[in-house]
Image (cartoon, rainbow, N blue to C red):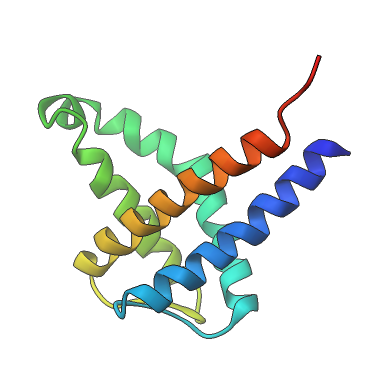
Length: 122
């Protein structure tokens, strides 16, 4: 029950984070909150399924760039999600890099807050 509540709260906060990214940066656009909910879900699923494969396939490049290529992978996931959805638009790859950076920063804040909120006491 607690796990499902954490998942739902993280999903809602991720959608709010996407709205914040669209508000802060003009290269990312969202139609409405329901589009943000769908986009947050799609980005989460892509990060769960596609990102590990991309990280593994690009491991030599990632090592050579000291991990900086992971920013490119995050941007590709962000941009790919916008290509799948009609209510979520990322104007260019440069916008995907900036948008994914902002979204990742907000995601770290969300994870930190939820970690404190749902910390297991024992």
